[in-house]
Length: 377
Image (cartoon, rainbow, N blue to C red):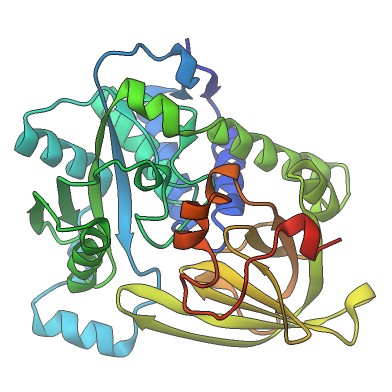
């Protein structure tokens, strides 16, 4: 029996809001996730997921994911598309993750029975659920990261020595690729990112064909239900005329790290990722202080008054100050009033291996990771 069932548009919006919250600034545009799941509701009437313990042990799981930069297109991008005879109005309308799972099954001869989202995010998680619905596959109540991440090595399968290859890729123009083998996981990430970069942003890919029994040992459990509950809480607090920011921080075991106005934004599209930083000038109890966040698709490093503060693998979530609506990094603009909520990392990424791939030094910063509870006390 399903653990949870979404049956209304309100359910969908609540769920995607929660996914966006844990997306830490990345994970795909939430409006796209809402569109996809509303289409599923229209055709199927419901969206479900299942507790890992209730899924039969036989068969294989698959992990579909959207790969690529979330940076906005520029005039130069449109110019390059035109030279390649690519019309933005004629992109694939089908769910790219459905296509990628079908392609992987075709190439490997293996028909998976369970879908595991790679991460939590406003589009990536809903797209995985949509693919499962379209292919009549079960979705586990969990994912492989417990947040959003920029690289596929920052996942629990990688931490547990699972191979991501083979990978099937289907981009937004209909280009099809198959990565049968890579010499190491970092090269699998690099090849996948360059495929998406060639397609000017996003491609749907599928990998991590893992037996169900192995998946149960490494999945971050209960995260889809957690997303739904956070989204519901934000809506319920608003309906009672309250600002949800502190209540949500309390529910997720986190803290409100800062409140202020976005004073400066810098970004670039580099190597298939959306890089940059936001600078925030404080107000209310943070008046006279400043906060800076560095992102690579998602938020990873922060500074409070130029001193290193909370970093990945702990989570940095930027929300609208007035109503706690979580913000997707490309949508953050100078002048916005925001709050920053910090949440402790999932325990899986506090291990030595976890910190090696998701700690500040992995991103090139000479900063020692300090536990969330220690740095925010």
